[in-house]
Length: 530
Image 1 (cartoon, rainbow, N blue to C red):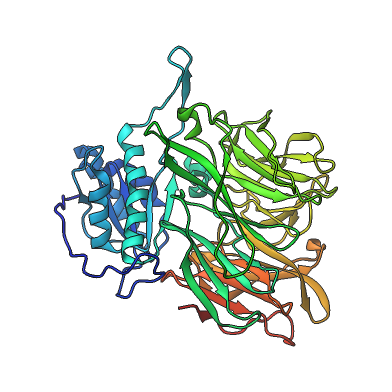
Image 2: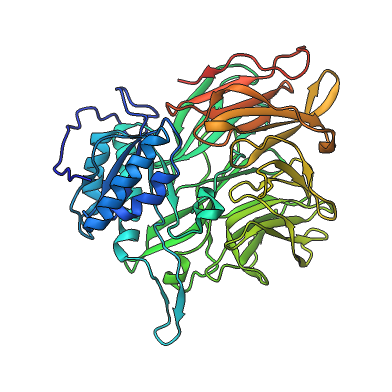
């Protein structure tokens, strides 16, 4: 590793704030931004073949760290990862990091930025001092927070979408790279509004990007539009209520009146497709009374039950699950802690079979999951503490059928469906990674079918189907012919056709629509939304 320093490159390519795409050429590379060379090792090891990577370090680190990074770069090259030159050392100090990272982003023009956890987890609690004990170097979290802020400013200045990914340090490598995800990836980012038009929502560094069909069922889209939003952390939860309104839930970091950072859950509603969203409201934080505890909150999951109650779930400071409920008249309950099991940053919420809500969570530092459920809306919570499924980390997702989840079996990576009280049903598709998107009620030659979409090998989009409610009949998977930077999403359009969306390697939305009358499940050509 050789040092590269200095501020380089101009900024004459800036576009107005709010623009969705850059007017000039930009890189499709990944920028890994970390405190020291040692912090880049795990991030680099998780890069896919063919990816172009730039490494930016706040400090040069020790000679041993630099040598280790040189070896990691050589290993990455053998895997087909292209590391562009030597790491760039910016010699940043706490309080002066954001501006220097911003300079690096203007120089490198990355599409994706990877960094570590902006709020590293505690390893113990000092009862006398009444504060958590953090074992990680302070610079590590400072660089991550500065990187998120710099990426936000870069996107708002240049108009070029940037997608940020944060990873936890020190996760057991046997659990795979997805176990380190601080903000889990979602498959639920394409929804059909009350007027029949589809909208896609993805989190970017500067806020939520939205694409919307101009006419229901037509391949004519607006976007990407950067929605007005607070300073959100990476990640987004998208769900719909019984009226078809879209609800967006995320985490924000803001300055309180005392000048200190505070992290809380925020929520907004999209009432009409393509129109401005409603105001963002705080849902709070289960550890709100203690800033040091509140900053460690996990990413929220949410679901509506059959009575119209909105349930929000989050991993709390103690690695339990906390939840609160909003009734249809807008009133919020107090936070309730669902105790019994320590959980990881991987929660999925879904409707229960008896009308209540369910929350599934991967247990901490393992490849198993547990479930809390209600027998009826507003009923008591019951914990099924025995491992219900054994998911590969990062693969849990809600199935269209109430009370059913999909996941990748940890031992084989095969896609499975899991139902409480029954064994997992294998669905094939052992290549690839991540969660599985699905939508029911698709007509395929007169049969009501569930269409599934998943990440395949090297980010390819794989599609399959089975008869509604009968996954045991098996799934035939086929390559849809495109790759995606995020898990693909699937929904039914205003004409009842399955539609698949993904984010191409250039950061643009790709859309494929089911061909009516085709023999079996077939999709038309991919279109690019520009």
